[in-house]
Image 1 (cartoon, rainbow, N blue to C red):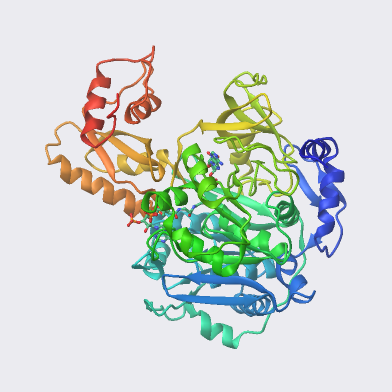
Image 2: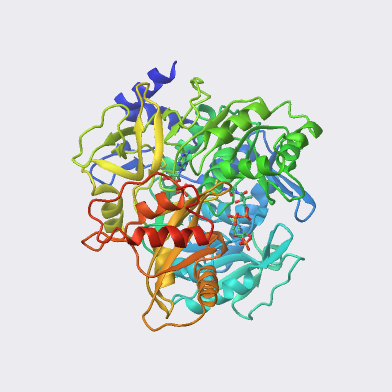
Amino acid sequence: MSYEEIYARSMGDPEGFWGEAAADIDWVKPWDKVLDDSNKPFYRWFSGGELNTCYNALDRHADGGRGDQPALIHDSPVTDSKTTYTYSELRDAVAKFAGVLKAQGVDKGDRVIVYMPMIPEAAIAMLACARIGAVYSVVFGGFAAKELATRIDDAKPKVIVSASCGIEGARVIGYKPLLDQAIELSAHKPDHTVIFQRPQAVAAMQEGRDVDWVEAAAAAEPADCVPVAATDPLYILYTSGTTGIPKGVVRDNGGHAVAMKWSMRNIYNVDPGDVYWAASDVGWVVGHSYIVYAPLLHGCTTIMFEGKPVGTPDPGAFWRVISENNVRVMFTAPTAFRAIKREDPEAEYLQKYGMSKFESLFLAGERCDPDTLEWAQTKLQVPVIDHWWQTETGWGIAANCLGIEQLPVKAGSPTCAVPGYDVQILDENGNQEQAGEIGRIMIKLPMPPGCLPTLWQNDERYVESYLSAQEGYYLTGDAGYKDEDGYLWIMSRIDDIINVAGHRLSTGGMEEVLSSHPDVAECAVIGAADQLKGELPVGLVVLKAGVDRDHEEIIAELVALVRQKIGPVAAFKKVTVVDRLPKTRSGKILRGTMKKIADGQEYKMPATIDDPAILDEIIEALIRIGYAQKS
Ligand code: COA
Ligand code: AMP
């Protein structure tokens, strides 16, 4: 069947469509309703059904003929090691660690925070929680202790699982000291932590609270899978909202398993037994969905890569991993390819490796600029597929579904809506925009299985953030248009979220941090275009009257403050001091105009600007830090 036919069926008969897809998952108890719409706008998939996600990801394959097949390969150039777990080995390790968690008092429904670098134990901890029905939340390693503390206070974990350190290129980053600091800062305290000690930095342990992973696993009884409701939460993943308080996106068990499995065949065109590689981090949604769940649910071999596209040791790292492991499909963010292209523009390192099994490259996480897409296509000679999605949906909203039908690629567009998603472009009044007209990109409810059913213990914020802009629709937060062929073009965010190296960050959150500095009266943070990372945050600050300290000193303090409060992942390094910020007559800071100025783009003088002369001062200030050069 063609893409058009399959898409039409998913729209016309969603229950039939997803009910059939659900047959690919093992259920302990079948569902009563495929789509339960009895409590609108809270739609639930497969209500009444019971399953275990870990069983479907591991035991089903371990006992069903794939026991000796590699399930997970940990490729770690930073520790010069490679470790393979077969499905049987991974199942046994997960069952043991599930026993460790149980021994620490973790039960079905209890929360566990996982704060781990890219080591197999991160996936083991996630799957062990799924095995016993505990709800976990992975926190990305590049966040500061304060961000971790915010998540501890929201999720209220019984146990936190962590490691002594992570390795970033050539640097060893202590995780345990950050964890200790976060627990100090948080109001909620976990009963225990379980720490995986790595030889690169052995962490000090707190007696009575901290448990050694290896010792505990040696003493633990393996734990079996427990049935959970399809609608029970599997995990919480915190993502940036418009304020400094992150949103706890909830993922359920049933809809998630069905969507993940369906996507592997239909979007990525991979078969059970294939090797699939998502070069991301388990701290992000791509890591959850496509390093851990989807490949394992599908019976593939997944690769967990502890390294960078460049510098570990060279820009040939991706080609080596693809070649050595016979990767069929790879998924990463465009920024990774921009990093490779910058260091090896002619892709000379490619000559060293044979990549005969490699069939396609998928990119997501940020807008894919046509230059990068075309470079990858030319050098790799395989289809390069941009696809668009977000933490909230957990899988592709728009893609070129290679397993259904390969549509022509239009550079700059992630192609068309994926079956299950009714994507519409609406204007401020809720009317559909004409083809080519930019509007708010919205998804008509219900969204397909796998998408967030709500925010963690916060139905109100869920409705307010996503469902209140237009009744019956989910607000993606992106603006863009559909062309005459139904292709989607994602142009910008409508809120203050920026995208730095594929990482989603809130400029509002950074402004909160800058405002907390005693010398700052007012500030604005904008996302300025960056050739490598897509966007980089740039701060403009107005100092309080009477502050006569050296500006450079204050700037250094502000940079350090954002790193300390949000983390190195914010990549916040550029700040400039201005006398005033441009505002509308009603007092709204003109961030959009400043972004255009920083990017050297044409801008219109806003009709509502209070004092046009301020813009000249802003241009000068941005030029001082290397922006606004082209205007
Ligand atoms: N733990 C601790 N610190 C981390 C971290 C982690 N897991 N991940 C990143 N950091 C730190 C980095 O060391 C860096 O710190 P620095 O300012 O001291 O140098 C900072 O956070 C910013 O990291 P990053 O944005 O990753 O920049 P980078 O310069 O280290 O690498 C790329 C740039 C493009 C190579 C890298 O971002 C990349 O490979 N991205 C693509 C893949 C990806 O992860 N996409 C995510 C969604 S799919
Ligand atoms: P995250 O929740 O971190 O995955 O970030 C989601 C956001 O990243 C989206 O709402 C978009 O703004 C942006 N994004 C992700 N993928 C793409 C893409 N393929 N094209 C354009 N923007 C994208």
